[in-house]
Image (tube, rainbow, N blue to C red):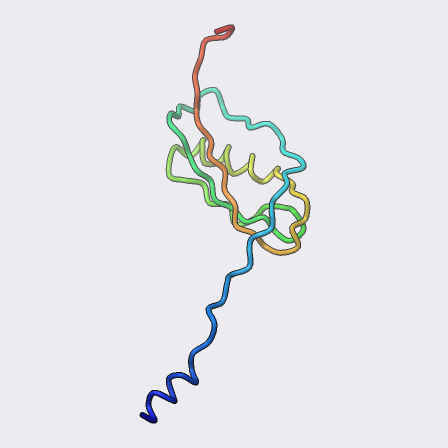
Length: 102
């Protein structure tokens, strides 16, 4: 019975993780990729929005180096309203090809 009392004393209410702040993108430059860079499909880039709104810890997915460099450089241009703390984020980019005027 003493063991039951000891266990009861160790219990605590479950904690709820604080919600990540809503991110508001304020600025980004256009994505530029070399015309010779051949890519297809979609790519998910993970990054951290720093407390001051800049991006860091950019993790480009596996793929052609020209695509990795272009996506990393693009995400580096993102500026968010400062969330006040580091916040994990990500963006998915999809290559879509179409003839001009279609």
